Image (cartoon, rainbow, N blue to C red; front, side, top):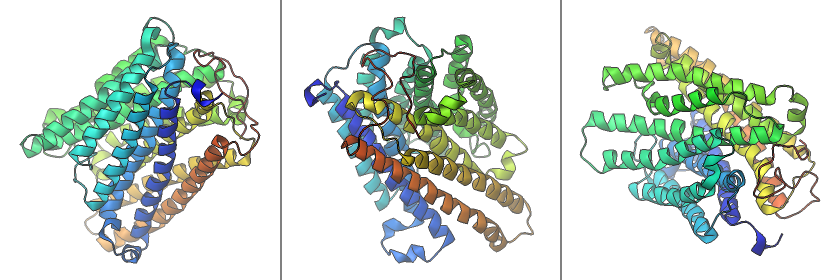
Length: 475
C-alpha cells in the first residue's frame, strides 16, 4: 500500500503512537531516577541543575506518563479503530495530523515548563497555555473520532461507543472547568481543593479508564470471536461508572477541609466501584473463558486480557484503601501509589500495548516478527509493574502501622522503607527494559527490517470489524 492510498488519519495515529512510545521511555526513566534519589541521596547532587531535583522530576514524569504515554497512545489506537467499527472513513486527514502534532507539542511544552517549576496543583502541574493546547488538540482529534462513529449508533457494538462518548466528553469538560476554577477565578481555598480532586477523578476515571474500556470491549470480542454475554450488565456498569467516577478523587482527602457529604460520597463511590469493576470482570471472563491457549500464543490478546483483569484488580484495591478502618492508617503512605501503578502500568499500559500490536498493522500494512523480544516485552513489563505494586503495598502497610505508633521515630520508619524501595527501583528497571524491547520491535517493524512473521492485521477489511482471529501474534 503506497502513501496515497493509506487511510486518512493513519499518519496522525502513527504520530500519536510513536510519541507515546518516546514519552513512555522518558517518563519511566525520570520516575526511576527520582525513586533512585530516595534510595541513594547523593544522586541528587550528581546533577546540580535545579530541574533534576525530586520535587520537579515526580510531577514531570507523571505528566509524561499520563498525557504523553497513555493519552497520546490511546488516542492513536482509537484513530485506527473508530472508522473500523463505524464503517465510515475519516475525512480531513491533514487536520487530524495537525491535531496530533499539536498534542505532542503541548506535551513537550508542559514537560519543559514543569521542570522549571510545577504549579503544585493536583493533576494539573502544567501551565494554562499548555492546557489550552491540550484542549484544542483534543477537540480536533475527538471531533474526528465522533465523525468516525457516524451511523454506527444504529448498529454494531454498543458498549465501546458508550465508553468512547464518556471519555470524549469528560476530558474537555473536566480540564476546562478545572482551569476556570483554579486559575481563572478567585475561588476560595476549599473550592480550589475540591476542584483539584474532581479534576483528578475526571482525568483518571472518566477519561483514561473509559478509553481503555473502549479497547477492551471492542478488541476482545474481535480477537476471541465472542460477543459480550450480558449487555444489560454492561450498561449497568457503564451507568455506574459515569455516576461514580467523578467522586473517586475525594477518597484520599476525605479528612480534609471539604464538606462531610462529599467525604462520605467519595468513600461510598470507591467501594461501589469495586462491584462495577467486578461486573465488567465477569464480562471479560465470559469473553476469555476456554481461550487460554490462544491467549498464551497471541501477544496482543495476552496483553489486553491482562489489562482487562487488572482493571478489576485496580478498583478492588481502591475499595480496600477506602474502607473506613483501613483509610485512616494508609492515607499518608505509599500504599496509595500502588493503585496508580496498577491503574496506569498494568491496566491501561497493557491494554494500550495489546491494541498497538493488534491495530497498527491495519493502517501501516506491516507485520510483527516471530521474535523472543515480544515475550521479553510482556514478561518484563508485567512482572516489573507487579513487583512495584506488591512492594508499595507492603511498604505502605509497614509505614502506616509505624506512623500510628508515636514511639517509632522517623529515622526508623525510613529504614523500614529502604528494602522495599530497592525492589521498586529494580522492578522499574525491568519495566523499562521491556519497553525498550517494544520500542526496538516497533521501529524495526515500521522500517521493514525483517520478514513479517505475524498477520498483517486483526481486521481484513479496513472498514469492517470481523469477530474472527486471523492468526497469532507469536510471543
